[in-house]
Image (tube, rainbow, N blue to C red; front, side, top):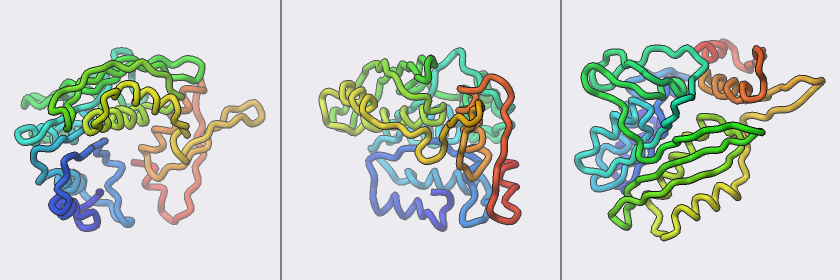
Length: 272
């Protein structure tokens, strides 16, 4: 759902009448549709319409993204909202981030922590701020090509009409900060909608047996001639950041980038 014309999010929501909608993040990198870059506000509007007519359901959204948070805050009166995000004291983004506008008043947000792009811990003078996540990553330790993580869960369940609480201690491959967000969204969604009793055991069993490709179909790290080389695919600057962050896990000094582009005038997208 990147625009209203092609995605018809209002039609989808009205026809399906969902009991749940999941938001990951709303990035400026994803405003291009059919070769045309659309205004960011139109992209946000399209995403908002996807849950506009949902009532008495569960909206699962990224607390670290101000735009998805704003959608959640505006649906709190008639839906249960599950916020997920990072709660890490020692993580620091390596990129110099651009100013992010408050979705409530359009002034610049102030960030105390940047996790990745617009995602982080933020607040505004108008009172808008990042909420406390219900599903949160509280520990991230990397050793020997493994992530050792802790996730605290306190999320509403659709069937039990009550909150489910548990803590996960898991090992994962080095999947990148972006895929850790996807893991949180997955865990939040399963917790919200499963009718099973042994939720924690099922989550652990899934991740222990899931075969990760890092990230799926988009990145591979190989050794050639004593050099560490990352071969990646991505159609925007966001993907370039993701790939470079993954490489920083394996290379201590400076990185060199070589990219190819098959289309005329496509270089602009790498300048985003």
